[in-house]
Image (cartoon, rainbow, N blue to C red; front, side, top):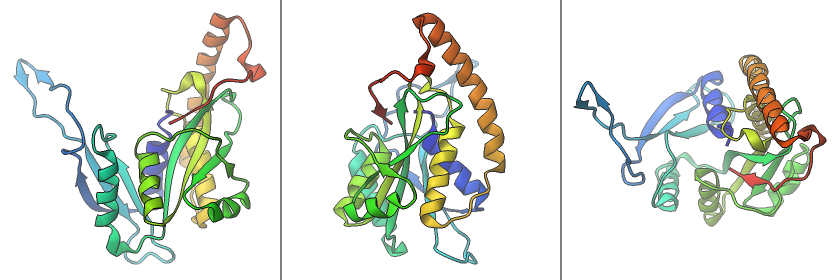
Length: 235
């Protein structure tokens, strides 16, 4: 929802100058549902991939590896994340972070709150020092959750950082929420992130969501700015 994880992960890769590390095929974990046709000729199917990036060899400080998937696994997803961690075993990973979103009644102009779901209770205390509270009971779908499940089985510290997004705009790319997630991630890890480029995208995204809010309010006959209670959903 809100494309928060993809925006945040891709921004990390660009702004930190991470280098391609490898390609992880998803052919055994996704089902193609169609093929394209151009001028009567069937196009070669595009098979989604997983892409790995890492800090350059001359990087000073804790190394960082970022995994971006072009699609969510539609089958055997839990086996996929375990296989991925097996491939990275020699990298001596000690912490796993994933990004996600939480649908709520937040106004588009408000700064999204960030909560966390963790694999070890001791990590909650550490995150609380940065103003990150525990997530409420629920479920985290897709790779964002499965990766933490696998990390927990391996007794790795892991956390999913969830940023609020307006519930009525779940399909709109939310750059403000992505910035909130990355800000929390930077605080916890000590990684310095330049938000100049992302700040510019936040304003444009806010305008689109404000227009959607006006349409929703007009249809409902009430002001959602009153922040009525809604059922939250994680994504």
